[in-house]
Length: 405
Image (cartoon, rainbow, N blue to C red):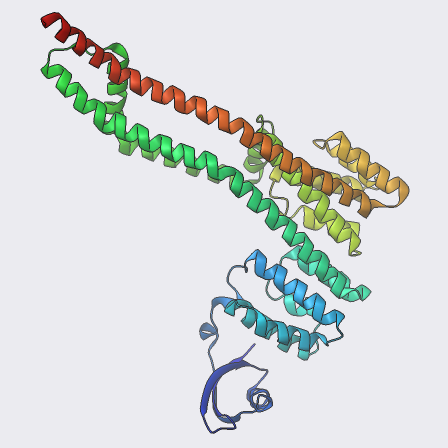
């Protein structure tokens, strides 16, 4: 949509500069006049000058949550959709999101629905969000749908924050461990070895082994780093492929402790996504299409859901389809079957989502509780080897000095 840079005079005679989104020059003048300004000059900006706000990556999750909550509140108060979007654009701190909302507002003024206006920005408004907003407009419950979206994204953000916190301690331990090993093995031991050779002291086997390892790393570190980088790149490339990503995720969910965390997160997302979309009135086909579109963050479960979707299209009920797809726990299958039997499928998925939320917290706590003693044992073993490699030759030196005296 055209963007105009303008010069205008306010009611005090001061020169004002700014930008306005409009359908044309006349519309731009009308919009500027509504703001109490007298237009002097307006120039249409080229598309490349419109900024990257309209097509670049999405906004932060917290901003999206704030936007949905404010829109829901203003719509519940009875404000028209155009006024609600305009007011919220003024209050948000993100310039990019303000620009996007200005585009949305102008599109709505031209006769488009909120869903149609937002659909132009797929990197800002996710496909799931657009589907729920579309259903909200069709059923007349947009404020409630926006509230549900805000709650849903808040849940996602909480899970993400919890995972980040759980990885801080192990990451810190690994960095500290690498730093200590680098200093002692890379500098202290080689210097001590030179001193021992000058004193004609035999170097113990454990010290010699560590010294040899240190020398090997110092000599071949470019190749070693290259191999690590190459391995990471290969794994990343394999994970990006369809079959490779499925296989890697399948292996990961079978890894003790960590696999439980990965599995519970994917299942919690599946249940919450399904409950949110089903509660908004989306069709089963639309729900499954979104669930299989890389929204679970786990290609293995997305592939299983796709198999279940194929079974649904063949006429199977949802519970039987998930069971035939395989890979899903019995608790999930039982909950879905109960929901279909009683006609409370959205409530069943909500309960399952709450259950797997708690399971995520328990499994993360179990992972942290397992990692802490493992890191202590690892640290103890490494430091023990380093201390032995230092103390043994020192003990020999002290023994030789004792013999002399």
